Length: 401
Image (cartoon, rainbow, N blue to C red; front, top):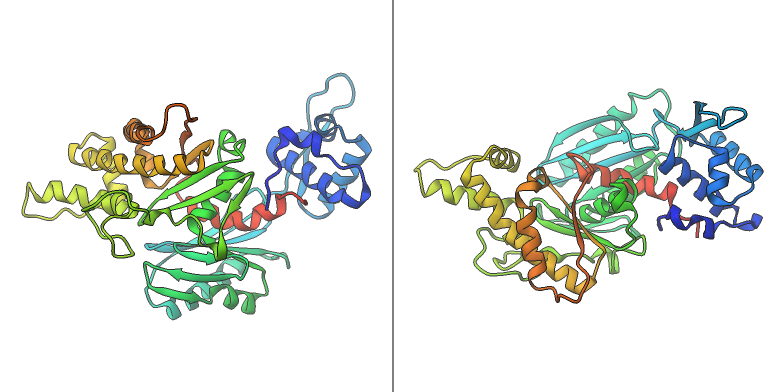
């Protein structure tokens, strides 16, 4: 699934009928990225013939992918008709599995969520599989019509093989070879795509993140959650490695004597030093040294306390920022990406920790090498859900080549 970069599109435009699909994808992406936009503007930007653009637009309208939204301003003639992606029609179903809960959502072609529900997680894989199937039934029942080609994307906190449609290992629950994709496919007949949560987030950043991020063709997405995950984008495509196992940098050695144990059992991994559970452990250590009462906070509360100035919360975040930066330094040395995108609840305190992360990210990078831009994710409060939906949406917009 290679992203189309519109700044290069006029050089990619194909004029042979045998590769008409390339031109169709370019027009669809112009509508997605530049809407509201007219046929004339697309033709001007791409150097395609106006008649070619009109024919492709008619085809996309017929397929229910774009719609007209009225007239734009005239520049000296008839007012142009403006186009945008069709909204309000179910197009993708996303299932976001995290160590805390499961979110099931349905969205339209633009990624707008039309309905969603949140389930508590259970370590009982048989039970939770049945609950997911029931929840899909409930969400589908809310719509009078569901497209036969509705796609399903599943984001999981572990190793998944998108080519085989398998969730190989979910370390947090010690699940192996989870058959959720096959169960959904058998019951509903929908195509299912499953991937690691960090890969899914990277895909969402590539297609739906800030415009600044979407212009980069080489970047790494770092998810700071219960663990630490990375999604690697090379030349506009996700790099997954053999059977989806690439990007497990949460298990690289970053130090010793971490405040918590990694999911693999080590106290030396990046995850053990830089995850949300490490942040909370540092915070609890501060409070428990001051009081006999163990503090009970989650990461959202801790970040909120830091933002209103509580010293212990801020200290826990800044100490963790050091380890986040050290891990990022290793990624930059190894891959030389244009950008590192950080996601997770800590981005709500980005202004408080950005300088600390940058200092340690730069510390072990040779001065003559280019520095990567560090950017917090713009995918909202649930980036892994957006990732799950993007597993389906990206395939509709991806290059035909």
